[in-house]
Length: 217
Image 1: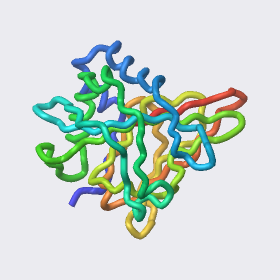
Image 2: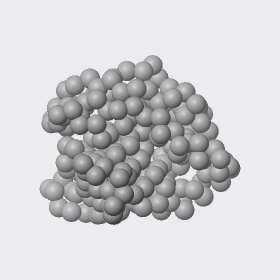
Image 3: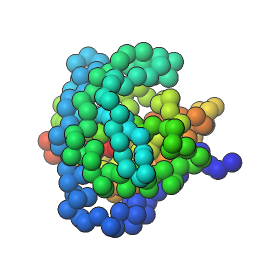
């Protein structure tokens, strides 16, 4: 049985996207600027922006399914589980991006296990966490957790003016397995969500800067 996670360097992901020009890749990363506030954070917190859509991969192309709420069981996510969270859908231009489809195919080629694309769905989350002088940002406010999926890819899209945000993996007995600071755009960790728990430390503004961001897919 393979290890329950794969750490993929940014250069390896970018090498798989070479048929797409730098402008198209830049446009995909810049789409994180158009995310909407995640209104489901507790106590009115507003440090996270988010969009979400679900797709099927058909003949290598992403086909979006009708938009619906994102749901997790309460036993999986005690903080937000059991609620129907209505996130804004991924923008159409992004959903139709050949770069996004190529990125998904690249990630599916690197999962630590098998996945049947003919029957499986692909949920794509665009998430921005904002750290300010007044408050840190919490990439995973639920702490160490599982997502309730088969596999999860954590892809860094942007990291500017922040410190922290260390990704950590644990086995099912909560023994530490792996930790890394994703630092380059497209650096990725792919995990078998059924075999590990994961968490991310808080992000804080670097130095005396007013605000910092961490964008993830």
